[in-house]
Image 1 (spheres, rainbow, N blue to C red):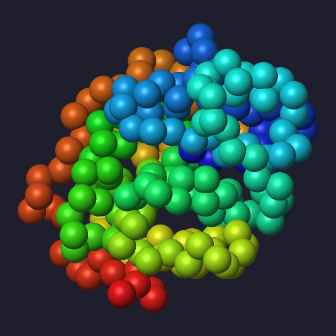
Image 2 (image 1 turned 120 degrees about the vertical axis):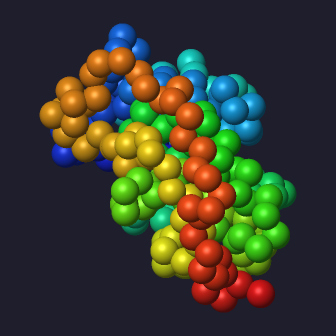
Length: 214
């Protein structure tokens, strides 16, 4: 889970993930959806994250689940790479921004299950033509663990558009919080429990191969 962004478009203090939504901090909603799936979790934070955010992250996570990224200012790709480096033995990885509280556990599970298909190296949900999150990478991408976080991050970002598209009807996969007005728009009933599994016939049938994969 990516929580290393500065969030300066939301407020200068960089505490966007603490903003209240439906009675809980924004970050708490995302952590809850991940917990429901039973999948292992890592929360990537900027190594210079404000103390209130660090304190909340400590409350919501278990020992060893927080990953510090000293290169967070260099872009989201370095945070993705940092999280993957911390879990090198995993068979796959799901990239989930911590400011997207309406991505339900069913969608997270859907992407994780898609990566079990030996033909798929990456996958992500698509809502009405717009690619969303979580973004999934299989170990079959043959990642070069010896490269720098920056180089690895750039490779992964280029690979985002080359994976399997999973068409869903839940707008939460494209709803992030950049500004206070975005947060206000998400107030109201939580609809993340709606069934979002697509019919298999709607799945993208193009090549799922990532650039450089073997």
